[in-house]
Length: 249
Image 1 (cartoon, rainbow, N blue to C red):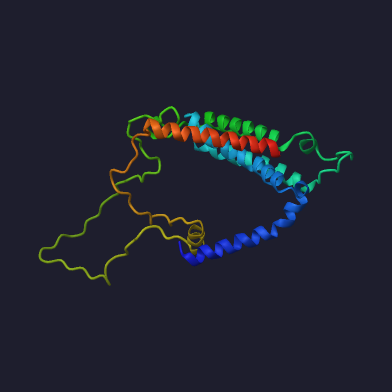
Image 2 (image 1 turned 120 degrees about the horizontal axis):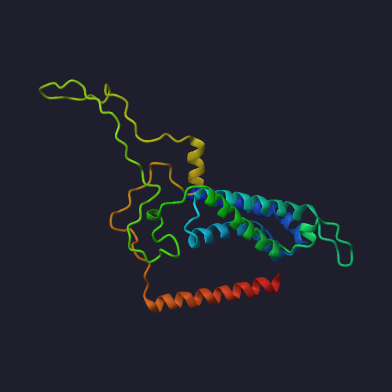
């Protein structure tokens, strides 16, 4: 990506952050930690549910993940809008907010939203065709040590169309680039889509570089020493994170 474009994007995000300060001051009595955790509780559970279901339940498919994510984010956005619309009463004053705000803490709402998203994913996945097993090797928890070759779902499908051949002439054949037929060099992408892709650091369709052969990951086996080190560090960080979250919330 162009360095100038990155700088412009950072400048825009800084401006948006500065303009968002009054919203933070009016939400959760200006407590920044509560604001961050409450917004995370409204938006993160659907993403967590999709991730967990995709890894732990091989029956989950693309349709279930999409509708589960959309439904969970919609419910979370409704709660977030209500949170910003109704101000919490002062200590000792009656709470006239809706029951979803007054009686359900945002941490409890996060658990409810997680369960709701999982139910949507399961219902939609069971109602639609499953993903074939040959596409899931080393992508789920249960097949993480599989040595079977995995077929990529996004691999281009090669189709053979009718081939038309012109008259065969003897002698040398020359071609003039000015008089040759139309040459297609891949799909044409509109300027606004190219700009959006560049802003997100992505490449336009058809411009991806070919990956070298022989670099496909066929095993997730790790050395016992570093595997134990990573597991201990992960448990330690998770414990500290849960403690800080519960203590300050």
